[in-house]
Structures are given as C-alpha cells and as structure tokens.
Image (tube, rainbow, N blue to C red; front, side, top):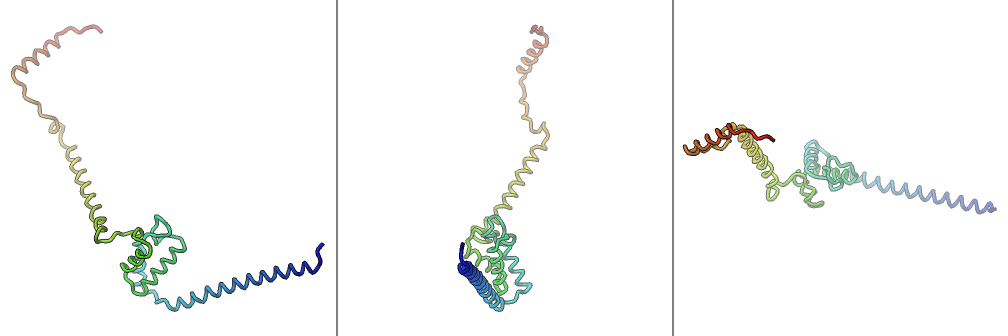
Length: 183
C-alpha cells in the first residue's frame, strides 16, 4: 500500500498540470484576441460598392481549396480566409480585375474561372459561339436535305433506247408466259 505522502504528491502533480494547461489556454486565447482586435481597427470600412467588387471578383475565381468548386461556395476555412482577404482588398479600393490578378499571381492561372478577353483567352470567347453556329448550319442543311421529296432525291432514270425497250418487253412477256416450276 502506498503512503499518504505519495498520494498527496500525485494529486499536487495533477493539479499543477491542470493549472499549467489552463494557463497555456488562457495565454493562447489572449494572444489570439489582441491581434485580431488590432487588425479590425486597421481594416477600412466595407461599403456597398466594395462589397459588389469583392462579390464580382469572388465569382470569377475557382477555389484552390475545394477542387471543382467556385470560391464563392467552397466551405473550407482557408477559402473563407481568402474571401475575407478579397473583401479587404476591395475595401482598400482595388478593382475586380486587380483582385483577380492578385489571386492568380498568388495561386496560379488554373484557378481563373473566366478566361481573359485578350491573348489566348480570347479564343475561349470566340470558338464556342462559332462552333455553335457551325453546328446549327450543319443541322439546317441536313434537315433541308431530308425534307426534299423522294422523287427529287432519286437518281434520274436513264432513257432506254428503242432496242433496249424491245428486249425488255420480250423478256417480260417470256417471263409472264413461262410455266412455273414445281418446288
């Protein structure tokens, strides 16, 4: 059996560990609250115009944290932080184009959801409508061809010479008068 002194020492050690843990948690909480309070004072106020710029910018970017999703619908905490950064840039007066370019510079071109309207990105704006027009033209031509009467599509019968007509008539007459052979 253990002595009373051993049990007291163990209890004091546990209490000291709990107190140290609580002190660390309080210290971390204080460290986290003070900088965020100082930052919130430094942020410029959000206006409806800056919110519209931020919303437009966020709508032109795919999320680097949720593959396949736009930044505006990505639920991850890093995406939320990125959206907050974009709102802050818009509140500081950055334009939508500047914000998108900032994002692309920091995360890469593959996150651009809307292609550029110049250079190689211009083809992304031109080719799809041209392909649709071409496809519609092909469909119209095929439908017109199908609507033509069958007589117009049939090959023209070649004119038979008099000799060929006589041979054909003789062959038909012979065929009609020939006795049927039993099977």
